[in-house]
Length: 396
Ligand SMILES: *Cc1c(COP(=O)(O)O)cnc(C)c1O
Image (cartoon, rainbow, N blue to C red):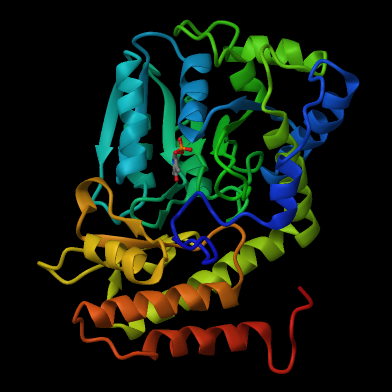
């Protein structure tokens, strides 16, 4: 199988060469001063990407799932109540993790394709006069459905209800791609991983904690060991880890952070939006629709595309791989077999995206759908030409 083609799964993403080279390093003594020169700039870069000056950043050898566990076990206690919207496979998995930890999860069910219902959350919090709900869990970007929720609106809802619950936000498939404002949105725990917006291989859980959440780690009573932030925080004071750190990945994180900040976060977000709009225009040209219910919910990192009733969407993914050596994402959970996903995040340009759109289009035609070759590509081209500006070409 060729590994030359770009990948269009919604994480892990394509990896820029500079980052691959940064990850590939000789062994250094992780207890020497050299390590601090890797760790500290990496943590500072993450802080800037999360748009926080007050939160502390922690990076574990793990994945986004470990980030969820870090959030839950360090801040909460057995039997605590948390409030969470279930609207896709990722929000569902976070809920299941909370349940396995013995938390009482008040689930707000939403149709898959909808976002977090902030008004409903406000009502529930306002009715919780005893402050039983200790945390509100939010999946900023539901990767299974391609839905972005309004975290600023959620913060306003929590405040309007006058409720002291912590706000935990899963930004695994949004941070580093779509705007994320940890301080402004009053996010208490932000969770992400290495293999999405940071364009790294998988292997890191990246977590930011507000001062208030950090204070709660001192009294939280859920069992924690590997993900104990107190041990990590203590070790960071000596520029080290409580165990052996993944030095190459952390070096990659340092470089990835530099790359994002050098491009400029606003430019990174604008690039993701422009690329996503091209994909959405192509989907419309094919006569298909997105799983996301309305434009304000559209994700700029992944598009989940509904296939006609009775058509097995998994065929799109398997045929693309078998015939063209290109990977798209399958549908997960409730939308398995109903949608296929085009991941358009991380290290990606308009030109790379056109190859993915062209491939999806060939696949749809091969599978007998009423799609005209070139229709989606042309719709995206039209958009990308306009986005870049007549006569202007970007340097990189
Ligand atoms: C990818 C993803 C995760 C899980 O991350 P892993 O690194 O696979 O553990 C969690 N939440 C969202 C929204 C994701 O996209």
